[in-house]
Image (cartoon, rainbow, N blue to C red; front, side, top):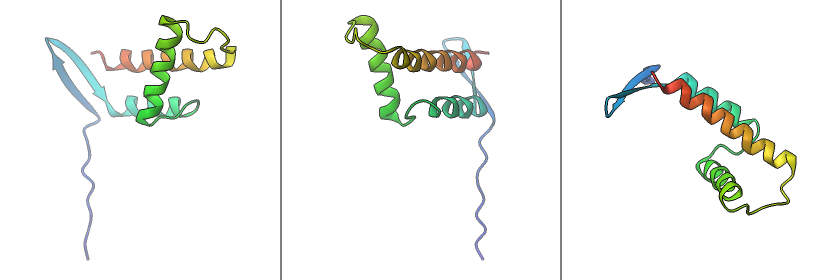
Length: 90
């Protein structure tokens, strides 16, 4: 009989970058992904598409005919990203 053990990752990991400490919390990351999955595709292309869409709309005013609902999704993503980034700063 083979018993498989899952290696548990630490819940929090401190990362130091140029003297600034960041607390990488796996629960916060999971919560961020769960919240985002409720309104967008959370795979790598989904995040890239959302970020490019937001930047194109802000920088280039690419889509002047964007609906309020489309704008709400982009703003919700930015809000969730803000909550997540604030949660990792020690």
